Image (cartoon, rainbow over the protein chains, first blue to last red):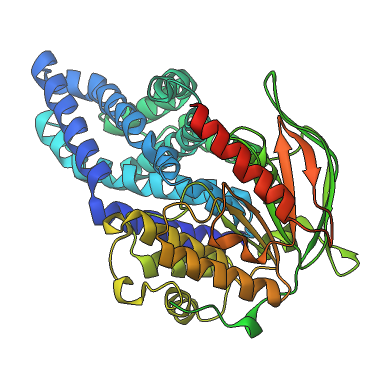
Length: 224
Length: 249
């Protein structure tokens, strides 16, 4: 079975189980909403402050959402040792990681797309004129978040204190994505708007490096 | 419940373990295992908890790599690749290896697709019939009893008509009727040439087809009834020792 086919089969299973329970999506959505509202009440920013600090707060909220949402990615497979069932199948082991990355990317992107209008209203930022550029940065930043997070979720799932370990591993490694995404978003929301090619290239490079690394070490990551 | 159709089953695989050792940190789980299991044998692994039975089965399933030594698989006289081995292994483990959030049918369709079986839905429905779960096919697995989950786990393991069936205490959670059915199923698989390796505790209905018994202690093989030997001595010894330990505790 080709990598794309087996990834597609596992991805379909991931989406079916999550949309059936909606546990993870619902919890993460509420969690990020609370963070965005709390940031807004705490800082009470002016319009210019919002454009300057808002993107950082937004990406910080997405980062927290990622660390919450990515945790169960492999923990769910431990209940009935279904990870072993996947590893017993005659498929490329990377397809297990790739399907989880794709599912996490879609879940995170969905949360971000729902929360973006809330952010725009609370921080009084006009996002409609710059929506295509914003979506591009959101997608690239989220690929980095989902890729790295899924890899570390696989590592943390096999360790003791796994609930504490994932944020400890993930947050420092994702600092470059946070900085690049925030800087790119600040540029987009600035007046006049500017899409920074430097930060976009940085995000693309980060995504490619982590995807390649995950592909190279995927088989070993899933072993006991 | 009925036994699966014998005509659809693969021929058995031969496995050789050459000086296999497995270490978890400082603990040796398996020591110097050199063993050949012929195609079509039905081997019972017996021994205390922690004696290395599960580790041996996991390594045969390629879920765990040996720290030393080598495991080789043959179909007839030809050595076969890791991917081909996976295609021909069925496993029933301690855990059920099925998703609680999916229905019984969805689980089997999912695994049938991963094994690239033709007509996965038909195949899944056919697999649910002999285990007596056809009427519960559309129910979520989380609503199943322990015995029903175990029967689904067995259906999942038999889905791709394996040439090597690895079973880790397969009778656990099954009622006497379920054990009888499992015994008959294993007998049918054995008659069709499938190689079966299972870990077992005490006497139960699954041991009817056993052609060879191997006792493990502290990760080493201490008794082996051998190919064509009488396994009953090792099986009885295991039962007596297990019941003595049970009495002592």
